[in-house]
Image (cartoon, rainbow, N blue to C red):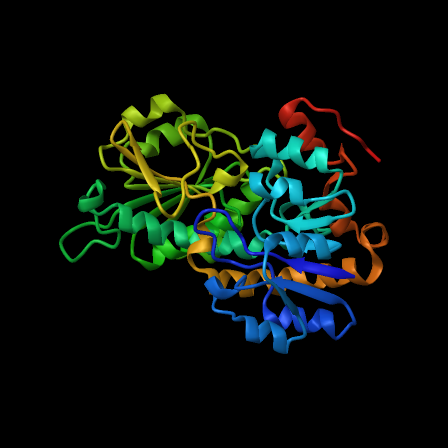
Length: 366
């Protein structure tokens, strides 16, 4: 198969779809890999590294799309890429369709095969291609939240860990999945007092077993959320519903109950966000303020640590890329139930129910 790895052109996205080691694994299986010039530069990988691994370097993104059967990316295509995607393409990347109707309709129009990292699902219900980026984003949410709590950038002026004689800050984490656990772990490590909330009691019991004493679990409902937002310094939104829009757990009216300078970080922004006031931001302009509450809603948080993120992503995507390349997408998806769950749009048809429901579009079960 001919595989293309283009430069990510989303704002401040420095990750790349594949490391040189990933390219090597494909070329030694007699697949052809086209990498756009300087595609890996932001992640610390250079054209000579890809060439040594057996890749062919192409100058432009147009050339990469034109030469390839399968496109391996990190983020969803943006508008200037739409016309480059043709019916023969298999596009393997993070799509997060449920948060963008224009993207969904654009990919339907291309009639390409769109396989989304975030909906590839193992037999136990876990999302193996989302986990590493959720781990990165969960940890980063505390790192960024702690920074934006500083007064010069309009935060409350709170040091999360406190100091002797001054109590630590309070962190509220909504969701006890991968993002929430990693966020709670980082916040606890800094010495903050952490409340982590979820509706899944089995998951809360697991959190109780693995977390230190400064992490407390509580069942998630509106009453409890409203109670805790009043004195939380940092609030992390990490709720995920597979393939669907995130629920709005914090509404606009709740902001008035928060103290001025409270920081809220919406890690679910890719799926529409779990705060009503969420709007996607970039690393260039990461925050905005509504009702004196600092919102951090960067839609590609792991793009700020691209070396770590690219290596972590290739570690988990490569086995699926190899399978798709070796068998072709149809046979690979027939033979692999997890990969089959990754099919979102095929030949102009939405084949993932939650995406169709998000926009009231037609769903095809085939």
